[in-house]
Every structure is written in C-alpha cells, then in structure tokens.
Image (cartoon, rainbow, N blue to C red; front, side):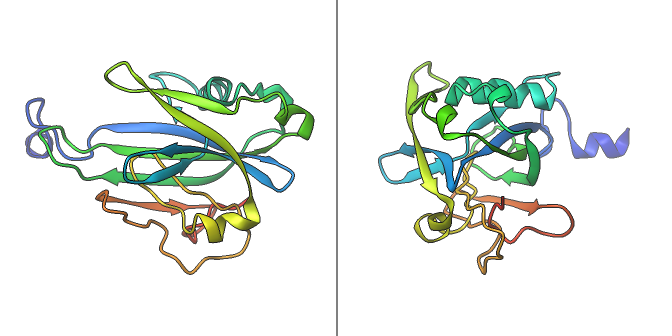
Length: 197
C-alpha cells in the first residue's frame, strides 16, 4: 500500500495513470487513403478516422461504431480490419489535470470505388463545450503522403499517416510543440514512423 500510495492518490493521481484506448483505421481505396483534415487558426492537422473506445466496449465494436459515425462506412462493405500499428502515447500538458496516457490501435482495411462513392465527405467532431469542429475527409494517394504530409506526427489524437512498406529516416514521433512523446510498433521492433499498409 505504501508504494501505491506514493505513486498515486485520489487527490493527486500520478501522471499517465489514466489510460484511454483509441481505435483508428487506414481505409484504402486502390492507392488512396482516407484522412480527416482539420483546419485551425495556426495549423492544419490530419488524422485517420477513429475515436475513443467506450468503457467496456470491445475493440471491433468501437472501430465499427467510429467508422460508421465518421465515414458512414459499414464494415460489412470492407475487407476484414487488420491491426498494423500501435502507439503508446503520453502527453505532457500544463494545468492541474494529470496528463493522460493513450493507446492507439490502428487498423488497415480496403474498400471498393463503389463503396467509396457512398461515404461521407465531412465529419463533425463534438467539442467539450458542445460545439462541433468540421473535418474534411480527403482521399490522398498514399505514395504522395510521405512527401506532402511528411512523417507520422503525434499531437493529441492526431496522426499523419503514410502507408508505405519502405522505411523512413524520420523519428517515430515528431514533437510539434505539443509536448507529446510515445513509442510505436508494428509486429516486432519499432515502427519507422510511417504507418504501413
């Protein structure tokens, strides 16, 4: 009890003692991958479709729900999702709230052009104050993402993804002033920083 008490108390929880799990998907249609673009006052961010897993929710159910909400995609219209990348993310931030730890589970799946034509082209993310942030769903040739979006970037829940099989010389996590740190893996060993198909 003494060790546990020194690590965390109800009044003063230890940093990264709260663990959240997020499911996301790299949805491919031929050579294009779906990314959600969010334009903000000082920057633009891209993220794969996905979101937080609800308490007690199975991972496949969470992925199915998030893709239905954000892309209007029914997973029965796609190939079976394959887990290709995991990220153990820790975010440092100011304020009294202890910084969270988030485990990202990134899946890969494929759809046909016929299914893509039926999907949403925008998504509205609900903010804590009840308002919504617009996200534009862009289909980008994965062969161009490494050059146009550069390295996989971790900033809050946001990732830039390039599903190339080749390695990348960049760091797995590009710290973009967000105070984020973490590790990524695909199978055995560390990821190159590029999400691969």
